[in-house]
Length: 100
Image (cartoon, rainbow, N blue to C red; front, side):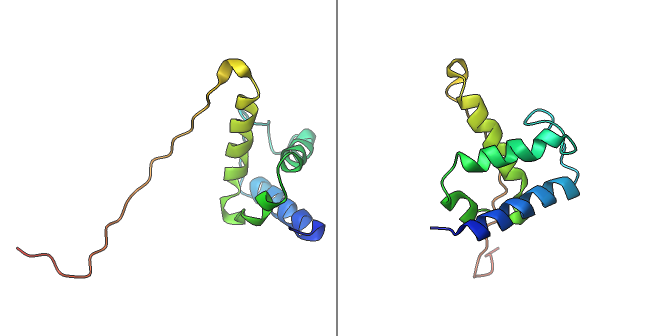
């Protein structure tokens, strides 16, 4: 179980990263410059288990906004099920040179 101090540090780092990188998640929770942004972000963290902050990477702070958006959409029964798809680039590495 994560201790409260670590949880607070992760929340602050995520918030700081989102504000610093200029993420403006209008469609998710409003502008990062909006005073309610911090409160809404904290409410998002509070509705999830403490283990959520353990698995977060500050470099992917935008994922927190994505998670929040998906959970908010799921709250409306008329919008269920909710899906989000990402395209991934797959790199195949070989250990032997190709034959020609």
